Image (cartoon, rainbow, N blue to C red):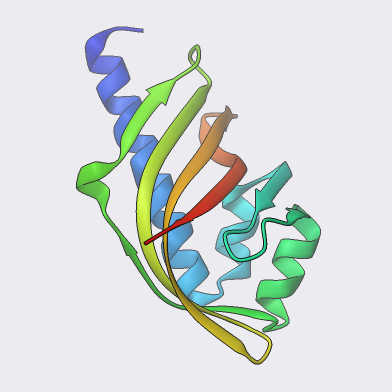
Length: 132
């Protein structure tokens, strides 16, 4: 991959990462449906549990999980590639989340793995690790 192509692809992956956070804040299921790969899995920052795509979308759509604020520190994000169709973002966020009756504010380091499908970057895997 040429340097220019890598830069263009990094910008596309970063834009998809930002779109994910916007969709979470808006509980935008249509946008999440487009962003999340069919095989998507998330390891959640609060419990460490693994959630498949359907359960994650159901939790957002049903209001079991609500994102009130997400601050992404984009200047710290590192974007790497494994071949031409897998992009990996390692970043940091500060989030305010409600899950049922519990609300938390949490800082995290995260890894998002994106896979290019039909020219679009889709999130295949996400894991957040709580930090102070």
